[in-house]
Structure formats: structure tokens, C-alpha cells
Length: 392
Length: 90
Image (cartoon, each protein chain N blue to C red):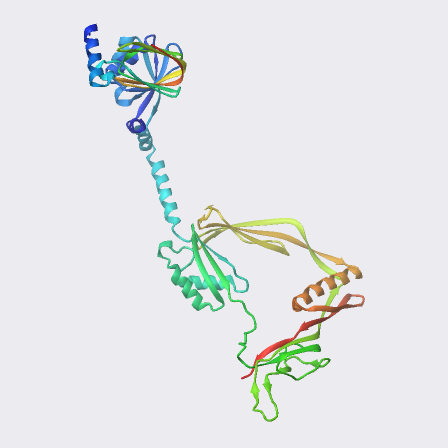
């Protein structure tokens, strides 16, 4: 039955309304005359809705005359009518078709490169490297040899330890893993000394192997040898070993900051100017780009105008937003200045102190005069300052 | 078709186990659930309304009672009716 329905659809059919008193006779006559009608529904006592193939419609005329009924077409359905419609609106449908072809072609290029996983390496460098290997915005997906590109990039960028290129829609997602940088590891079989990484006063020296050169309470300079791996004993040949030691030492960190009491602050005035730029592939279309604000913050936002999930197309709208800033002379109180000093100093010093260090003492001294507040921070910490150094 | 020839053909079909709907020219009714009925070997419809459809068959009139009855397809020898069928009368 399904096949018959498809066949009817392809041939085209009409939905007709038959009115008359002898509906049953109408149907019987149609059947006898080999006129196929289907989906017959009674609407009311004298009317019936039915479907009939196009080629049979004319043949109903005789039956209509015989049964004193009337037939009207309610609707025409099926492929021939769609075809006729398409033929009538040739331009519309052909441009629709071309649009699909265009989108299909466009979606077979890479239009966006996303780099995931970078921490210290500049994305620009990776992009440049990818560009040289042939992966850029606008390269054809079919021509990309991902393995080759990955290998080449790894060779050319030694700071990466792994790279994976995935094509998702029109996006190329480049995942990278950077080489973790630490002190060069010295193998246990190599002889080494231990030197001081920083200035400090040794509080506890625990030597597991090697000969100590300093003792607890000694103050040492950066680079000073603390434990030697060269063992000298009477009546024995000098030999070199891999020395191991824990060197706890007190170290100091210092920093200073000055904050003037009179400050020029910038406050947004609320005036905002926007400018737009359309970027198609590498071509940019823009209006005038002049701003008559004296001081302003500039924000740039890029948006892909057309994107379906991972399918991104290379039309970008770039919005420049300028927010006017008004300079404002502000006088802050001494306490405020102190607070600000402390905040900045704490934040800065935190970056320099290693994470596993224990802070023993923290002092901030303030010196106030008429114009500004100066502050000095000194932090005393306990940390391991021993660093292995290979003996050559 | 006289009564004698009908009896003869009935015997024939009983003896040789021939399908009766062909030999005797009677209707074969297929009911699917309560929603669809197919009558084969019909001789045209006599009455058609939403509640009642009467179909002429070789062995008399078959009446179908129900609601929203519609003729799904109709051919020379087969008619399919859909709708909520409640009664079938012979």
C-alpha cells in the first residue's frame, strides 16, 4: 500500500469533493470503470471527499452525468505540481540550489583555527608554524595531511611535546601539550655537588650523601657550594659521588612600593562609540575609524556571523567599542594608600616565594610624607635552597 | 447460478479442499483489530455513511456499523474500510 501511495504521489493526485444524492452509485461506477479513488470520507449526508489520480479525473465526467452529482477540486497534490511550481519559479529554486552548493563547498575548507592547551607558548607562534605547513584559514580540508603537519610542527617547535589536529566542521582544533620545564634532572649515576640557589642562613643541613662544606648557622651566598660530591680521604683515591642533601635555610625577600596621595583616576563618562568592520576571508570592509575621545578604553570583539555548531564560515563582524574616560583628580587618605601599598606588595611578593616555603615573618614598614606613602615589605621564609650541580 | 450448482460447488470445494471464496464466489472478510476491514469479492457498495456501510457480496449484504467510517481503497474485487467498527451484520 505504501508503494501505491508513493506511486500516486509521483503521478500527482487531486483531492475532490463530490456532491450528490447517489454517492454509492458514483463510487461503484468509478470502480467498474477502473477509476481508482481512495481515502473516501463522508463529510455530510450528500458530500464526500476523495482522492483521485490526475489522469482519471477527466473520465469522471460520464459518471458525474449519470449520477447527477457535482465534482469540484479542493486541492492538487503530488510531484507534478511541485515540478510545475519549481518551473514557474526557476530563478528562486536555482539560486536556492546554488546556495546549497555554495555552502557545501564552503564547508569543505578550514575557516577557524582553535588552539587548546597552551600555557607559555604564544598562540601566534603555533599559528605561524601551522601556516607554513599548510594549515591556515581557508585551506582545503581534503588536501590536509594532518600527520605530516603534526610531525613538522613538532620538529620545528621543540617547546611542544605533543600536538594533535582535529577537524571539526570548518574548525581545526589544534591541541598542544607543552614540554614541562623544570631544572634539568641529573641521573643518580652522575656525580654532583649541591649549591645554594639563593642567599640565606642555613638552619638545618641534612646530608644523605656527600661531604658538607658548611654547617648550620652559616650564611651562604647564591651559587656557593654547600655539599661536595668529590670525596677526598687519606690513603684513598679521590672519588666522585652523587650527593644528596636537604638544605633548609632562612631567606629574605624584599620589595618596595610608593603610592602618591594625589591620583589621577580615569572614570568612564558613559559615552560609548562603536565602529564595525566586516571581515570576509582576508579582506576587510570598514567605515571611518576615528574617535574624538581624548582618553578611552578600546574593546575589540570578533564574531562569526554565520556558524552552525562546528561549521563556521569566514565572515566576521569586528566590533570596536570605545568608552570615553574622564580624568579625575582624587586625593586618597593615608590609610587608603597604605592599604593599597600592602595589597600590591603582597601580591607581588607572593609570586617570588616558592610554594613549599614556610613564611616565618612578614613586615611592612610605611614611610609617610606629604605627597605619598612609601612601603617596604620584608618576608622571612624557610625553604630548601639546595640545587644539584653536575660535576664535569 | 441455481441452487443445485451452488450445492455442487460446495461439495466440490469440500472434497478437494479448494478455497471457498474462489469456488463459491462468496466474500472473504479480513478484520484487523477494530479499526480496519477488508472485504474481498464484493459486488459494490449499497449504502455509505459515516456510521454505516453496506456492501453487496455474493452471499448477501454485509453491513458494517461504526464511527467515522471511511473507504481507504476501493477496487473491483476488494474494498478496505477504516474507522471504529462496532458491529458486523450479515
